[in-house]
Image (cartoon, rainbow, N blue to C red; front, side):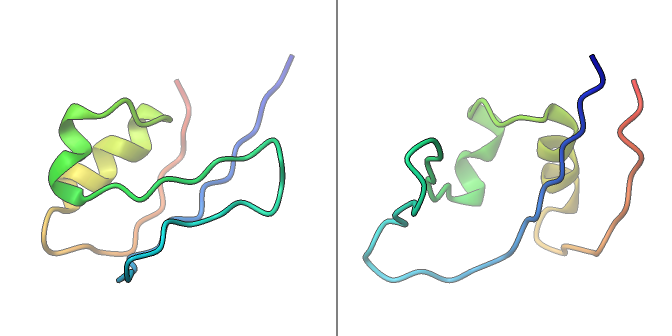
Length: 66
């Protein structure tokens, strides 16, 4: 079966509150960039792109072909 995924990734500054999902089947978690390398984030290619951007993020587009 063909599967497609769209990820919208934003850099944000948050206060004290954790995000709360408005849908029962979704969960959200804030993750400090420093913790990204040691965390299971999927898809892996998105994680790698975020790690490669480091402290100088750039807009990017990447085909997710395997």
